[in-house]
Length: 220
Image (cartoon, rainbow, N blue to C red; front, side, top):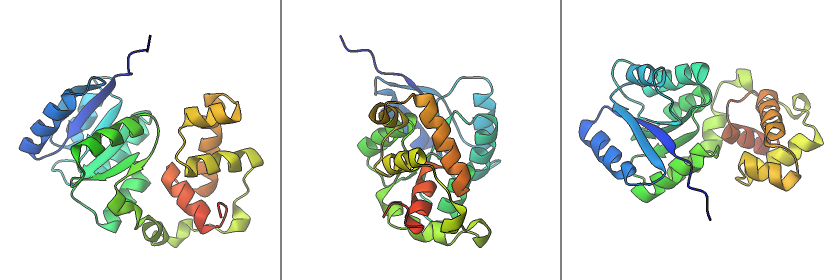
C-alpha cells in the first residue's frame, strides 16, 4: 500500500486579488496541497508564518508595504526551512539576481502553464530548484553581471572529492534524498556537504553554485 503524499502547506502572496483567488482555487484541487492563507504583501506573509506552520510561499515580487525580495530575505533569515517560489511577471535580470541573492528556491514567470506551476511547487517543496525556462537561458549572464566583489578564482575554491561528487549530482538535478541514496550516505551528511559547497562558492542556493562551478570549469 502506497503511503499518502506529503501535504505541502502553502501561503499565496500576490497583490492581484483575482489572480490570487484563481491560484488558491486551482491549487486547492491538488490532494497534496493545502492553502493555509492568501495575502497581498510581504509583511502579511511574515505575520502568517509567525502564527502558522508553512512549507512554501508562492511569492509575487512587486507588492505594496513589503515587496517579495525584502520578504524573501527576511523570511530566509527567520525561517530558512520554508521554501520560497517566486511567481511574478518580472523577468528583469536585476530582479532575478536580487531574488537569488535573497535565497529564493525557485523562480517562475506568470506565463507558466498551471500544470507546470504545480510541478514546480512539488519540486521546490522537495528541495529541488526550479527556474522558468525563459530565465534559465539568461542565468549565466545574470550571475556574471553580479558584483565582482564576490567573484571567485579556481585557486580560491577547494572542494573535497565528496563535495565534487555531490556538486555533480546537484548539476544533474538530483534532490538531497536521491544524492544520499546514490552515494550511500545519510541525508544529513548530504545537507552538510551542500552547506559547505554553498559557503565555499559564496552563494546562497544550488543554482548559483552550479553556475559558478561551470564558470570555473569544475563541471566540464
